[in-house]
Length: 102
Image (cartoon, rainbow, N blue to C red; front, side):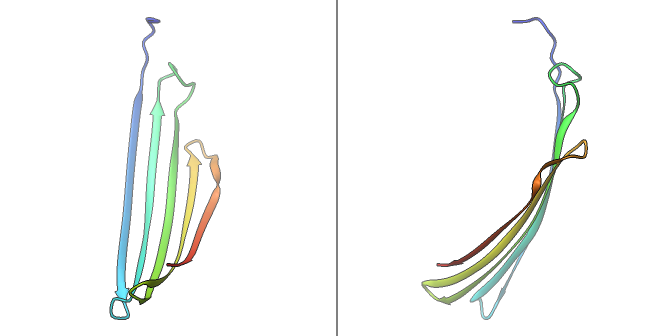
């Protein structure tokens, strides 16, 4: 034991919204949504020299269509961004596409 007092003040907030809609007599479906998350950690200098944290955002969408009981097409994409609370990017914006026949 070091005998040093450590401080940890942490906060996390997140919100997500999603919706879906069926079409073509339920053969097709569209799903879309967005999310936002904010994280912050303050140790008042006991573990980190400054407050650290991140803001993350995402938007996504997917379209599915069933051509039969065992054959479906899926197209989707997701965009993600993350930023340090000091204003710098944690990583470049990312787009993740998907196209599949299942």
